[in-house]
Length: 604
Image (cartoon, rainbow, N blue to C red; front, side):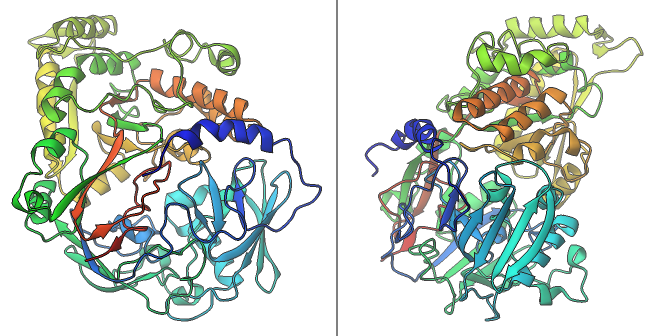
C-alpha cells in the first residue's frame, strides 16, 4: 500500500503557492491542466499512478443496483437510469486524475491550451478517437454535444452552457470555447462534458428518447443486452480506440460487466452472499464487522477490503425542504436537529463505529474552524451579518446528546425553541397561533432498512414533542420523481464533496436553482451569503483566498441547519470475490465510482 496516503494533501497548498509564482508569457498547448499550478504527471506519463498498466484483460463481473430503470440515457432529465452508464460507455475530452485535487489529462483530446486568465480554452482532438461504431469523433460532434446537453440535457449540464460566449472550430481537430464571465474553473469543467454522436440524434427527440435509443459513446464499454428494470450487460469493445492512451492504460479491464437490479438492499446482500454478485460496497461499519461471516467469506472466496481516503466528509443526513412551512423557519429546523439523538442512533445502527459529520467539509483543511470567525473568513461574512443565522459568525456546533435513549436534555431545549417560535401543545399536538399542527413526513426508498431504522427511533422523539410523523416508502421510480419535483418534507441526503470545490457548488446550494425541478439544491438554499461565498471561491487567485472562502461557505451552510447530519464514511469498504485485484498504490480520493471497477482486474 501507499506509504503515506495523506502526504500529497498536506503538500497541495504549499505546492500551489510555489507554482502560482510562475506565469506563461503566452498560451501553450499541454497534455493536461490543473486548477492551480501544473499537472503532477509529466507529458510522457505511462499511466495514472493508481492504475496498473500491465493489468490483465478478461473476466466477467456482476454488480447490483436497487430499484429499476426505464431509460438508458444518462444525459437527460427524463427517466431513471443506471448510474454507471454515465461513466463506462462514454468519454469526455479530458479525464480526471483522482490522485490530485483537480487535474485533467487528455482523453478524447490530445492537448489543451488556454489563455493565462482562462477566458478561453482550446482542445485538439486525437486523430484516432472513435465512437463505438467505428465512426470518428469530430469537432462537429463536440460542438453539438455541448449545445444539446446545455439546452436539452440534464440540469447538471446546463450551467456551463450559460457561461459560454462562443464555441467554434479553429482547425481540422480543434475547438475553442470562449467564456462569457471570469471563472478560472470553467476551462476544466469544459473538458469534462460527455461527447455524443450528433448523427445518431438527427430527426429524434433527444430529451424524450425511448428506452431503446441508447446513446452511442466512445468509451471502452457498449450496452449489449438489457431487460427493462432487471439487468443491463456491458461488453468491453475489442476495437476500443483508446486502449493505448496513457489515461486509459491499465483501466477498464473486465471483458463483461453486468448490473442486476434488486428490490432492496437486503435482497441484494443475500444475492452477494449466494455468489450471484462479484462485489458490493458496504456503508455500515457494524454490518461490515458482524454480517460478513457467511460461508463464502469464511472460506476466503470473498475478501473484505478497506480503502482509506483524504476527502472532506461531504454531507450525509436528512435534508429539510425549506420551500415549505414549517421548514422555512430556522427555529423549527433547530428543534428538529436537537431532537435527533445521534449518539443513541449511531450506536444502534452502526455500533458507534462511524464518527459524526460536523460540517460540510469536515475532515479537511477546507472545513470551518471552531469558535468565532476570524481574519479573511470573517471579512467575507460580515457584509451579510444581518442575514446570517446564529452561529455563522459566533461559532456553531451540532447538538450533542447524552447517549441515552430518551435524550431528555436536548428534547427540553427543542421544546423551548419551538415555544419561542409560537408552537405550543394543544390536545397532545404541537400547534401554532393559526391552529395548524406540526407534522413531518419522511420520504424513503422502499427497502432502505437502515434509514427506516433511523426514522423509527427519531420518530419516537418527535412524537414526544407533539410532532406528528408519517413515513412514505416508495419505489425507486416514485422516489426519483418526487425528489425531482421537490415533493418531500425530509428525505435522506448525500452530497459528496471534493478537495477542489467549484462551480458544482452553485448546483448544490445556489439561489439560481433553488426552485428548479430536478435541482440538486434539495434543501432550497436561497442565501445571498452562500452565493457570495461561492463567487469568492471561484474568483480566488491564491490558495489562501480559496481556503478562506470555502471555510466561510461551510459556516453559512452548517449554521443554516438545512440538513440533520449523520455519520461520515471515513473509509471505503468493498467486499469482493477473491479473483478481483487492485493496485497497491491508492489515490487520495480513495474509492469511488471511477476507482472500482475502473482500475481493478480479474485474476484466477
